[in-house]
Image (cartoon, rainbow, N blue to C red; front, side):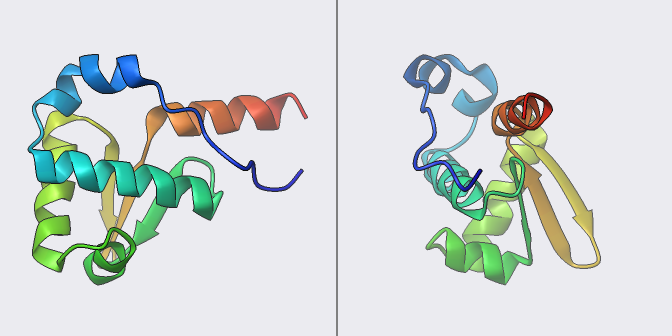
Length: 105
């Protein structure tokens, strides 16, 4: 099975998520770009890259992505890990849905 053509955007979750609501408008915009990139990447609900790579993907500056990643981690909007100069960001819902699809193949 190839990449799915779209992903569900749950507007209720977007508006009601207290973790996401604590984030700045800039971080919320970057989060949407990250969700789109995670979907396009088709790598199980996660994306990994350096700050410079993620900034290019999210169409922002390295300083903005670094600030957004810190907010995403602090507010627990997503799971964030750091390793060897790279950042991995996991969207829990997208990962869970990916894992469920894989388990039912």
